[in-house]
Length: 117
Image 1 (cartoon, rainbow, N blue to C red):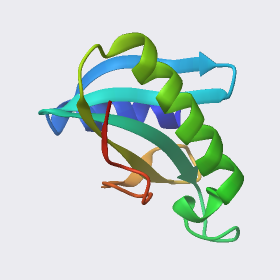
Image 2: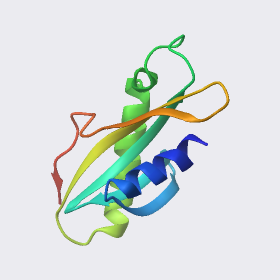
Image 3: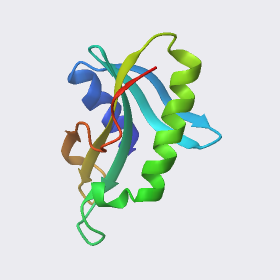
């Protein structure tokens, strides 16, 4: 449900969705989208309460490593020229009934972003 909410949110923000649930040998990327001239690899995190912390706190160093490898896998197969890319996180707070209460994007969430090639 969170990814569907994230997709609608991103489209309203002007992102062009390229791939959903892109699977690589290194793990899955929730959403790949373009934001102008920048390729955005997006992780979606949902929460119904703060019992386990903020949604973005659910992304540990192991997940960041997987996202980095998976994104390079995508870039090598799909981008013939140098591109700018970044890692974004869409956080979603849901009501107990599953309705979105708050949706936000954290752009350039991880320090690995840079031009590639």
